[in-house]
Image (cartoon, rainbow, N blue to C red; front, side, top):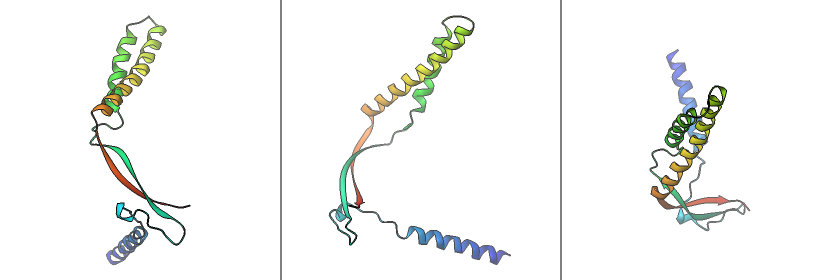
Length: 121
């Protein structure tokens, strides 16, 4: 039984390796390279952000929602207070996300990378 499992695992690994063997990565040294099917390699300089600790801006969204909810809870009474709390949380979350995004853009580690892709025309 163990021999059968071992053979099955080896078969799966060999299939996975065969599927990834054809993946191509092109670099700046390949720019302008042409292929028989009419495609070629084109490289572009792209500005990317590195080392962002919170790329989805969850911290800013959560903090804004809590503060907005607390402020909204101070308004009105009864059902109006509940509605103001929810509205404040939604608005605060949106504002917090936007503020964090702006701060990450100004402070973020931005670098320029050369990315090359095969273009089919």
